[in-house]
Each structure stands twice: as structure tokens, then as C-alpha cells.
Image 1 (tube, rainbow, N blue to C red):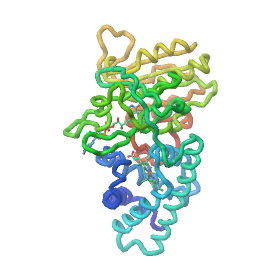
Image 2 (cartoon, rainbow, N blue to C red; image 1 turned 45 degrees about the vertical axis):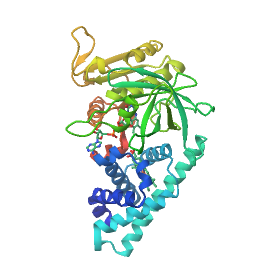
Image 3 (cartoon, rainbow, N blue to C red; image 1 turned 45 degrees about the horizontal axis):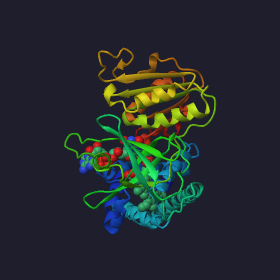
Image 4 (spheres, rainbow, N blue to C red; image 1 turned 90 degrees about the horizontal axis):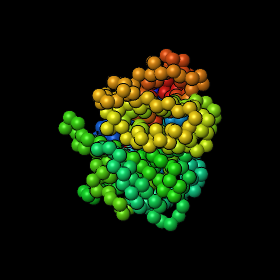
Length: 396
Ligand SMILES: Cc1cc2nc3c(=O)[nH]c(=O)nc-3n(C[C@H](O)[C@H](O)[C@H](O)COP(=O)(O)OP(=O)(O)OC[C@H]3O[C@@H](n4cnc5c(N)ncnc54)[C@H](O)[C@@H]3O)c2cc1C
Ligand code: HEM
């Protein structure tokens, strides 16, 4: 494996982009579990490739970055999608066949065996972690989804709608750690079925959960987002959605450390549940929220966040808009710039937004002396952070 890690890494994306069409041809039912938007953009191929290479590297290099957070993120995502242990055989078969197809004669039986072993080491760790997460959530892996009734639609902005959901099976709402997401599966008009993840944008409702969805519009000839458009245009009060148990580890630990919640665009959905949590359980904890958006009219949940923020003793809000209204004297023009914002010691940062936004934010914070280990991030898509920052994927 040591001898071939570099060549596999160099061809990793080629391998995964050969792998998916092979697997879908043999198992078309999996088209209903994999996000076809991420297939079209190639993001899932890159995330899978990056994770397998990172796993192999940490097996052979004792100085490799810790891998635990990558494993956790994948396991949570898999659990929210109801991935089953037996499906690992299918993925393993096609992934290793794709390695053979791309690398050709270079793959001797010895090399093939070594990579087979790497795959199954990774797979068995994921299977074990996923079994643990299913059990912890009290979810039967054979029935990972529950029906929820849409009881309310709140048009937050022209492009953002909140859907308030109530379990429709008579059972209680699951426990939700603020910052977690659910996978929502929808049956689309063309007969296909697709899942997407949405952060639970409020957990203050007791018996109900809320998701807040930004409509994704296609740019440069790309199609509009399939599921966000469906949720905006077709889902009404009385509709039933199939929803997974809450998943994800973008959650705040209870400590006294001051919090900075720095978001852009749809990333705002992670802010409200965290602000609600602090208001409910630690109102004396310092919270700074910083948000960037196109305009104030696009800034969803703004008033609700400010309203709940009043319950926190030391709460400060900053906003940056690409275009600021003439009457708005508080918001700043342009992209988020934290250089002027006073930052307390021992700050814990939670950031969510497009990758370029988070990368820029991270460098500003590192330059201001915030340790990388204090910066947590959530990506609203396959995690490609490591793809662009190979030497430091563990740090955020
Ligand atoms: C953990 C997590 C939490 C999330 N939380 C939220 C949230 O709270 N709120 C929220 O609004 N979103 C959230 N998201 C994002 C959400 O899951 C969806 O990705 C988003 O709604 C877009 O889905 P879609 O089906 O509308 O778009 P898709 O159909 O998946 O399209 C996505 C993009 O791919 C492009 N594309 C699609 N097909 C092609 C093609 N053939 N060629 C070129 N480009 C193409 C589209 O133009 C679009 O830009 C979250 C994601 C994750 C992973
Ligand atoms: C060792 C084996 C596997 C590895 C290394 C792996 C790796 C990954 C990675 C890195 C992601 C992206 C996580 C993120 O950042 O969001 C992911 C998502 C996913 N995985 Fe796996 N996976 C494995 C096995 C499987 C299996 C067996 C299935 C079931 C068929 C599966 C189905 C999925 C699906 C549906 C997604 C979400 C895709 C998307 O949103 O585009 N995976 N996996």
C-alpha cells in the first residue's frame, strides 16, 4: 500500500468518477439514496476520494492528522441516509473494480489485496460507528425515516421558507442537539426520489421541529436545485415529508467560553438553534453573531435571532451586506471582515457558509490568534475542506 498510495492519490478522482457510474448501472436503486446534484457537480466523488486517501495516509503515516472528525462526519451522514452494512459489499466491489480499471496492469494481485484490506478496515470502522449512532438515537436501521406533517410554512424572505414539522406517527419528537441536521427524502414529480440535509433551524418548539430552506437557483445554464425548488413550490401545509433522526456533530458543548457564530447565506440556519440553546441554558455566556448576506432582505431569521438574543446578557450582532440600504446605519458594506470586531480570549467559533467564506474567515481568525482547534465548521454539501487544505484538514 505504501508503494501505491501516491499513485492512487494521484488518480483518486478518476477512480471515484469511474466508480459511481459502474455502481449505479449495477444498482439503480442507489440513485434514490445518493444526492444527484452532488453527482452532477462531482463534489461527492471528490469527497469520497479525499476521505479514502486520508484514511490510507493515516494508516501509514504516524504523523498524519487525526482522522476521527472525518469518520464522525461520514458516519452521521450515512446514518441520516439509512446506509446498511450489506451495502458496503456493493460499494467495495465497485470501488476496487474501478481502481483496477483506472490503474490497469499496475494493480498486481498483491496491490489489489492491500487496497481491499484498506477498504474493509475503513468500512468496518464506519459500520461499527454507524451501528453505535443508530443505537444511540434509538433508530431501527431498517426504518431510518419517520413521516412528519407540515403544519406551517413561514415565508422568511423571497427565497427562504421555514417548514414546521410535527411527527405524523404519533411518537415523540426525537432529541435534537442544536446545530444538528436531518435528511429529508422527497418523491419528485418525475418519479425519482432524493434526499437532502437540512439543519433543524429551531428546537424551541417542543413537539415540533423546523427546517429553513433557501431556494437554489441554477446559474450559468445549470438547472435550479431539485429538492429546494420542490420544497418551495410543491410542499404545502398538510404535506407529509419523510425525515431522518437528527445527525451531525456541529454542536456546542456547555462551557463558559464565549461563542462566535459566523455565517453567510443559508448558514444562518445553524445560528438560531444555538442562540436558543444559550438563551435557555446559559444566558450569562457571551455570544457574538456575525452574518454576511446579499442584502438585508435576503437575511433570513434575522429578527428571530435578534429577538432570542435579547435573552442573553452579553449578545452582539454584526451584519455585512453586499448592498446596504440607505436607512441601515448598522450594517457594513461588503464581505464579512472581522478585523475590527473585538474578540474575547478563549473564543469558540462555529462557522457555516460557502467554503471560500469559511476559509477566509479562518485565516482572519488564525491571524487574530484564535487557535485552529477552537474553530468548528459545517459544510452544506460534501466536505471538500480537506481537498483544498491537505496539510491541515483536522484543524477545523
Ligand atoms: C449538513 C447539511 C445541512 C444543510 N442545511 C441546510 C439548511 O439548513 N438550509 C438550506 O437551505 N440548505 C441546507 N443544506 C443544503 C441542502 O442539503 C441542499 O444541498 C440544497 O437545498 C440544494 O439542494 P437542491 O436539491 O435544491 O439542489 P441540487 O439539485 O442538489 O443542485 C445543487 C447545485 O448543483 C447544480 N447542478 C445540479 N445539476 C447540475 C448539472 N447537471 N450540471 C451542473 N450543475 C448542476 C445546481 O445548479 C445547484 O447549484 C444543508 C446541507 C448539508 C450537507
Ligand atoms: C468505506 C466505505 C465508504 C466511505 C469511505 C464513504 C465515504 C463517504 C464520504 C466521504 C461521504 C461525504 C460525507 C460528507 O462530507 O458529507 C459519504 C457520503 C455518502 N455515502 Fe459513503 N462511504 C462509504 C460507504 C458507503 C456505502 C456502503 C454507501 C451506501 C450505498 C454510502 C452512501 C453514501 C451516501 C448516499 C452519501 C451522501 C452522498 C451525497 O450527499 O452526495 N457510502 N460517504
